[in-house]
Length: 219
Length: 368
Figure 1: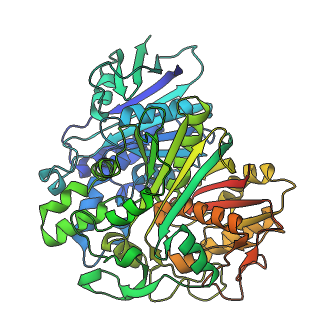
Figure 2: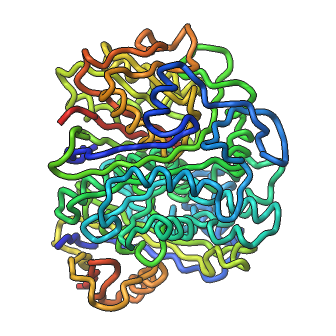
Figure 3: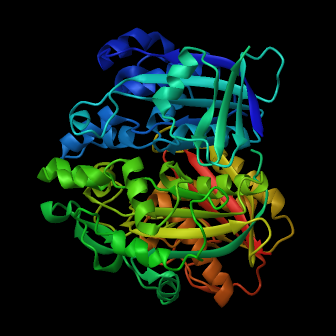
């Protein structure tokens, strides 16, 4: 069984807050002038990561199904005069890069992941397989506009970051993946579901992917 | 950075604007260039820029995407197995997935494109087309994406979570991405000349897809010292001191000590990155010839790491590595090989890729 201990947790659940309001609210969390071109997801992920004080030898695992939706919408709308800025910020994994570049924060491993029903299982597995002393597992979505009306964007905005180490002392909880035979029923477990479990500090012991059971304990 | 444990490479293959692995390798040896000047926005026109499309494909998106037959042709070369089962996981990597479909929808209004527009929809559709199960992990880190798949697959194998792993990488260009690079002004009317010391830099963009089958103990080749590093200095530029390149190459340099190497670099044709990359490689491996194939194939983005791995394997098998097609003297360093050369005097190749955000990836490929 793969496992690590959860030592820090940061959550952002701004509801339907407008991106401009988020930018103003979080402006002081970033270097002066840096937030002007940041996306809402970049701001939220950046603030969540900042709470965990990233270090050079951390590994960062980033999970999102849709990524930088608003930048993508803006970039698509900019044609035929394509916007170079929106092109850059629409590319996965821009949200984490926006935050870490503004802080000039290098990191060895960075695993940006995407998916749907098994994304949580895969991101947790990637975190637990990392040899780095500390893994920052982060993720989130931003609410779309015209892509949402077409069913290809998130309907809510949220972000989270957790710090995972091998050290049990002083931990807030434990995250583990246990192999199983895959006959345990429905296995899909979405990123918003995981966010809600973190927010409620809900204990989990359930299938989350093919042959994988997620265990989340709180102390 | 801690390097991933070594794994064996059972099989690798690719498809490019020049055809399958063997056809691409042979054409590169002949110095052929897949890139051709084409309107940057396809049917909507625009400046003529160097693009390399596979199999006579049109840049304009269709629904379903017109690159499916190319992927199916490539997939037919993958050794048969229960891919996508828990012990045979698939690691899919791409930068663009089907995002060109969102462009097609926004420009033309046909909702049929939406079924392929997000990474998850695109990969789920692809998995159905190729008959994979549901153990499919998807990674997307721009032009180092393929390396992340190789690294994660190696870790799954060593943790005993997999007995065999398939890394499948693809990126097919569309007006979405050609328009973006054109807006950044690095995709322009000039053909790329990787590592050439010239006044203006330029890249080409090309279709690419590839696969690698990894296991712990079977296969003719070994992939070791997989290394990753992220500068997080600037979205589209590297630190001027080249420290990011050196940080990534360090573990590979240590693992390759005493070997007679050649280098398959990233080499897109941009000036500053090419200068820094070639200098870092020359400092780490001063005796090793350096090649890039993107002057012919174009930059195949998130797939380039696996596409070029397959071509490196083909070079070792056939005994001859293509030179830097499209490159011209003077080059940034004397190690840049413009002509093809025999691999007989070498016992390893270092493969590198770089990406937006100052992301770096590298590994060592040797005979098992």
